[in-house]
Length: 115
Image 1 (tube, rainbow, N blue to C red):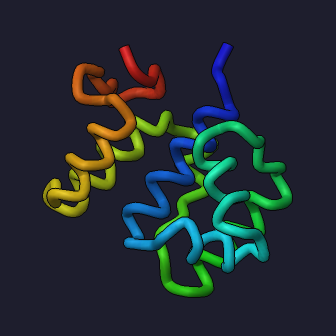
Image 2 (cartoon, rainbow, N blue to C red):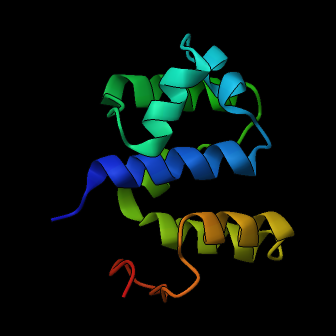
């Protein structure tokens, strides 16, 4: 069974880092402290769907990347690969990949996720 809490946590990390935001920036955007954002991002606390939608709206209103379609349809590894392809694999791609321990994982082009 898929661990949605960890997937959401990984997505929050990807979205924050890809947009060059701090945990404080993200917490402020949704009316929380950086500590609460840190708990969401680490998977210690689960972000409710309503808060995830609010978060997506706040990111988008500020011109930031937050792709809910990807959250629903792709694994974090697949989405990061998509971002890398679209942006010519910037150094940030490799930093995020290493942080999420994806260096040794292969990414399927279908919806199979990490093999």
